[in-house]
Length: 89
Length: 414
Image (cartoon, rainbow over all chains, first blue to last red; front, side, top):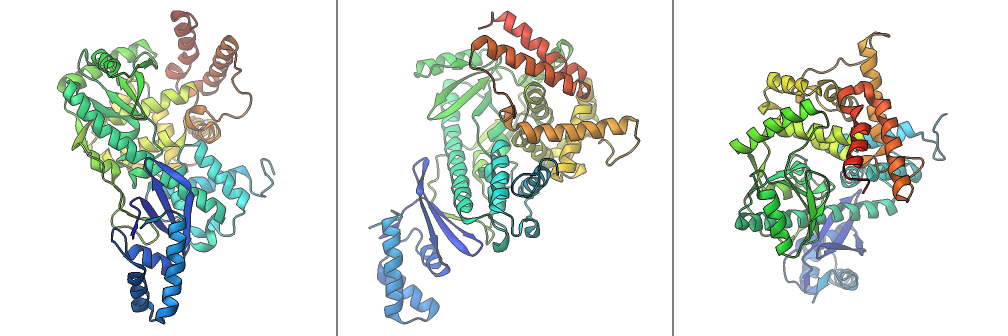
């Protein structure tokens, strides 16, 4: 899977907000808030193909968490991004 | 207290907070978080509404979203502001893409042009993509090109509408293109004659400035931690550079254009910011003495000095950026000239804050829908306005209602 081309992500007072853009206009429904960890993952795979496994590896490496816990978090994040149309499979 | 609203913060305080964010955006410095700590949602809404009225929404929103956590706007407004910023950036990218296309088309058709006003001014902003976009204004400076370009546009299926006696406009790729046969004009015959000669000289010499189109898309580099990290933006096909007016002419023209709108119906901070950012960027290239004499010869020195003082006192502009002598600061003699200019400075600032972009947000009675009642309403308004500001510049302001009336007679009240 891959993140869609046009979006921006911004840290506002410790909360990350991700906005997707479509064509020359904006889809106002697509503002996704991310925590620090989710923002780290998203920023790590910009313009790259990735799998849930890749994201889990990144989490385990960066935060030294148990793999099954990391995998669950990744699953939840990917689910949200898919639902909001921010990644394509 | 007068003007106190249900937020417990009076309008002067809202204006002060708005101006603080705007000046922080203009001079690329952090806003003072303490001033915004614990601010009520209602006050934030007023600040956002004022930013919209002044057509500087994205600039102000960007600074608001860069405040420390405890000083941020309410979450719902943060989302709206973020979207506003992204929308402004997207619109600007689109405009710059269309500008690149237009340049190629006009070049092939044989109409070299000079980019004027808005989009060209963006290049002087700390982040050009945050300037609220308008249309694409171009000056077709070679004799005959203005009409030829109109025929060309019609041949492409774009019907141009007259938008005044020095420009027409048409929609092209979703953007309003506004070709001009003149840079500007004056209502006063003497000044008009002088300006026609200067314009002719500029057109004949054709020694224009140039700005790389990529500079119109530039974002601050490297990104600050609190700035958006934009990724994967498709790069439009860019033309290498566009022509701009020579610096002295542009510094003069940006003011005159703003002042003409001010005299007619009003002006917002967007146009004001365009002028002061241009001066901030280019003041070192302007011959101070020559510029001062030139401005004086058009009877514009005093109004320019008043606007400069507004920039210094309300937007924290540095006095050094103005290539002409400034009026003295602070309160001085009670019955002397100093007091008069202080009154003008306060009135001009209050008028900009009250009436907003092009005077569109003027409070009170709106223009009636009927054709003749609408014309009469507009005429009465301009008479009142010219009387209010006549002492700022008798020759430029008192003439406005007269010119409006004679122009109506000339075109037969169409």
